[in-house]
Length: 633
Ligand code: COA
Ligand code: AMP
Image 1 (cartoon, helix red, strand yellow):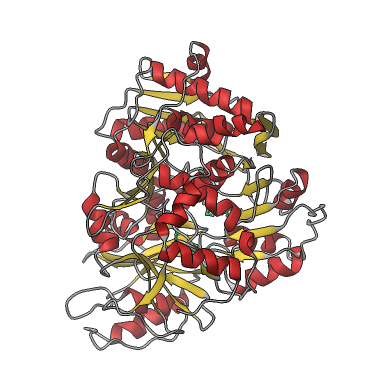
Image 2: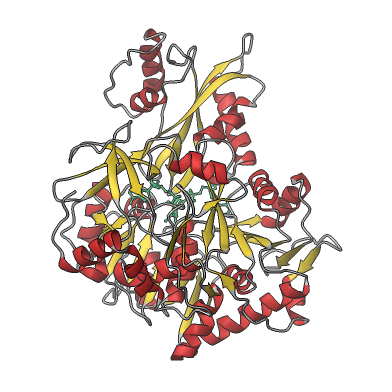
C-alpha cells in the first residue's frame, strides 16, 4: 500500500506497524499507572491479544485525580449546557472528582464491587458522566444504554450484562417533550429475567418518577449518607465497560473494552488525530449512549486534561440551527465533533448559515463520523463555516478512529468522500471474498490486520465465540470491519458503506435483522425483508417489504402504521421506522436467500444487474414499480 508522504504520520505509522511494542510502550509511559506494564503486547492464541497485561491502573483516577495532581484541579473539566432546561453548569476537575468519589462511595455502600456490572440508562445530564466515572472508580463495569431505546431493548441488555445496579433518571427531554424514563425502566425490569438489587433514580425537577419501595433509591438521598470512595486498582485487561451495538442478528452484542489499552489509545488519539492539548475545549455533539459519547465526551477529553462539553440539546430547534455555533463561541471550543446528519439537519433549516453569526475564532477543526460524510455536506460545511472539515472512520468495536486526517501530525490535503489515511496502529487492507488483497482503486472488504492496536474490543460480553466467529474468522489474520471501500493511489481510504445488514439512521447503527424479527411477529405478515434506503437528512431510513399471509386483507397504510408502532415499542423511537410496502413476492436465490442488495439498489433508484442465481427474475420489475409508486422520503 502506498501512503501520502507526511513525515510525522509516516514515521509514527511505520513504527506502530513494525515495532508496535516500542511504539505503544512509549504511549503507555505517559499515563500514571499504579503498576507500569512490563508486558506490552501478549498473544494468547490465534485470535486474542492482550495489551499491557501486567499493568495496573484505574481509568477514573487517570481522568480525574491524576489531572488534579498535574495541577488541573481548578480547571473546568465539564461544561453542561442544556437549552432544553435552560440550565448551564461547569465542574472543575476537583468538583467532578468529588462528585464521582461520592457516588462511588454510595454504590460501594450498596455492595458494588470490582467486576460487578452497572447499567446506566440516562439522558445527557452531568450525573450520567459522573455515574460512568464512579463505576470505573470502583473497578466495576458500566453499560450505558441510549435513552432512545425501548423497554424491551433495555431488558435484553439487563439480561445480558446482569448488573447489580441500574442508574437512571425520571426523564429525558426531546426538544420540548418530556420522555418519562422511569416507566420504561420499570417495564424493562419486570420483563428481564435478571433481578437487579437496586435502581438508583435521579429525580429531575421536570418530572417526578414514582418509586418502588425497597428496590428504587433516590439518587440525592443516597448521596447524603455516603462518604467518598478511593479508586480501586484494576488490571489493564480488566473490562471498563460493555457497550451494546447492532449486529446482523436480532441480539445486540456487548462490545467489551479493557481499561489499559483504552486509556493509552484515547490519550494518543486526542493529540495525534484531533490535535488538542491539555486545557483545550472539546465538544463532541453525541450522546453518552454511543461510543462517540464514551470516548470523546467522557474519557478521552478528561484523560487528556481537556474541558469537555456535555450538550443536552439538538443541532436544530433547541432553539435553532445556530446552536452548535453558539456553543462553540461561548465555550471557545477548539474541536467540534458531530455526525454528518446533524449538519444536514442544520443545512436544511439554515441553508445560508445566517445563524452562524458567532465568533468562531477558537474553533480549529470540525470532525465528522458515525456515517459516510457525503461530499455535498462536506462542501457545505467547508464553504459556510470556513474551518477544516475532517471525516474520520471508526466503529463501536474499535473505540477510536481507524482512519482520519491526523490534525496533530499535520493535515493531508483533504479529498471529499475519503476519511484520508489509516491512523498509526491500524493496518488497513482491502480484501476480496477469498481474503486476497485487491488492487488499488478496487472496492472490497475493509479488513484490519491483527493485532488490533490498544483500545479496540477485547471480546463480546459472555460470548467470545461470537467475537471470533463474527470478526476474526472471515479473513485469517484479520479483523473484518463489516464495511466496504477502497484505497486510492495516494493511500486515501474511501469507506463506502456496510457489506452486511447493518444500517445507519441519523448516525445511529441499527440492525435490519432485528427489525425483521419485529415485523415478522405481526399476525398478518407471512414473510418480510427490511432494508435501508437513502434519506436526505438521516442518511438512511428502514423500509419493510412485506408479504401478507394468505387471506389477509389489511391495507398497506394500516399495516405500515401498526408496524411503525410495533418497532417503536420493541426497539425504540430512534429506529425511525415509518415505511412498509406490500409485495406479492420477494426476490430470492434458488437456495432461498433474499437478494437484499438488489432490493437496496432498486429502492435507491440505482442501476442493478439481475443476479444469475435469482429464482424468479420477473418479481424485480414488479417491486421496482411498487417502490416507484411509494413516497419514500
Ligand atoms: N431519548 C428518547 N427518545 C429519543 C432520544 C433519547 N435520547 N433520542 C432520540 N429520540 C427519539 C426522538 O425524539 C425521535 O422521536 P419521534 O419519532 O417521536 O420524533 C426519534 O427518537 C428519532 O430521533 P432522531 O433520529 O434523533 O430524529 P430527530 O428528528 O429528533 O433529530 C437529528 C434529527 C439529525 C437532529 C438527530 O438525529 C441528530 O442530532 N443526530 C446525530 C446523531 C449522533 O450524534 N450520533 C452519534 C454518532 S456521532
Ligand atoms: P457505530 O459502531 O455505531 O459507530 O457505527 C459504525 C459504522 O458507522 C461503521 O461500520 C460505518 O459503517 C459507519 N461509519 C462510521 N464513521 C464513518 C465514516 N467516517 N465514513 C463512512 N462510514 C462511517
